[in-house]
Length: 605
Image (cartoon, rainbow, N blue to C red; front, side, top):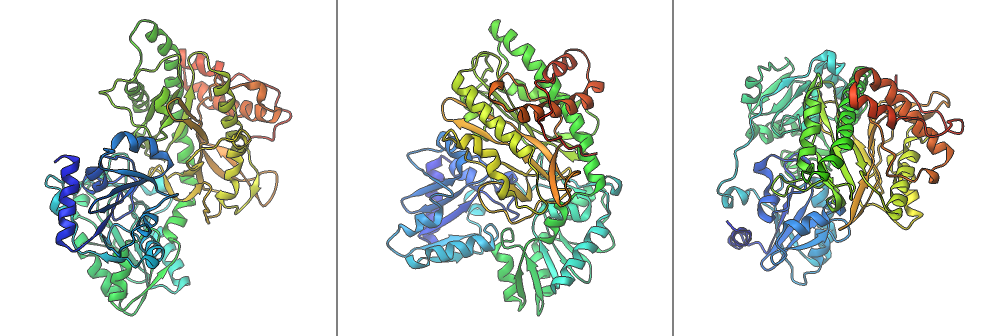
């Protein structure tokens, strides 16, 4: 089917069901960032492959809503004769719906839209008189003729000695929280929460080691885990005695039985609207609150933290070998007319990671972006395009790995030739913001959005900014983007406490010219010098090549932070490197200034 045929078929289905509009989302029933192919309905319909998007389809309009990360990508991927592109936050679907003067019947799949999403949109469009219709049928099951089957990835066990706690102990902690809140059960719809609760990992979606499934955790009685049994059988997984396996299609039946006359907890930001509807229909009381599983999972225990540190040293060996290889190979190959390509570079960082003990797979598709492509925050290189990395343009790599004991995510931007003064000044502002947040001292329990401006302030002084968050949580051999913590402009009401893992990744992007970003993973630790305060201790162990920056614009304190960070990198990696990689690392980590004016860089061991 052509893109036009797909829209026409969906519109025909809408007409048959008495709908004047239909809402499509990039999400699956778990609000996963990266869905299995069968759930990528928005991508199939529009051609847009980004991880976050929505669409509003009417009889004569098709509007794709994406955030700032994907504006450039969306314009390249969708047919402009069929689709209009709007900003997801500045001009969301509800704003588009309000622009229609005639009342609409707007259909949606209640398993794909959350309680909060539907409630917010319903309130926003109420003055327009539109009617939201929760449907019991999935149109894509009918119109997508070659839709892939549901994934059946085998589970693997996360050993208790790697997790630092048994699944039974974790479930007991959650149950205690539920008792305190007066809840009879909690509905678990996030697969990474289930992976944590059961000490298992999945293989349903590459690079996202979670078992796609849902569960109900009662205060009394076994956890009801709605998952295809073949996934456990294939991985030779025997459920714990307090875990009952049931087919996914029976999930709502079990929920109705437990909900009758009881208070059932759910997270409205992630639970499907169909879940709350089922609780109400059964005579239960849905209680909306923050997900206790997610909050407990975010606070890493001592064993998990040790695993992160070990994984990052291994990842640092791969990163250093990669950057040393690039520094030597890019100019030499370009001079001979056989340049290194974006995909070749992505292959090389993967190859180097595969040499590390405990490496499982990448934690996401590497963003290997040369020149103007780096202006797309979530760019994906394509082998057919064979884009070269040249000395005349910046090169950005955002890449990470899944290890048995941790998940990594880092970004470096490199220059292999002369850099204009304007680009150098902007890059230095990004570096200053990166250092400001990385070196921050803050009261324990501060919210992430209270600190976000530290990373943006140097760019703001130049009248510049970036349209993405400054950082996110990272799972323990789990999702590289872990809820609930986010550095960003939007409020994030989850306090930062010792044991939380975050990334710090400011950047700047000029469409059609260049993009740059610096990213480290950090651990929140108790400040060793000031009681009641916290600091960030770096986990990422990879040199930050300084050739892109104007070092004269850095303060003594900023230079001191860099020197102390590079001293840690040198100490951790020097015994593990040899040859060109070791020589390059030693050169890149040479002190740039005296460190006397710098607040000490904390250590996380």
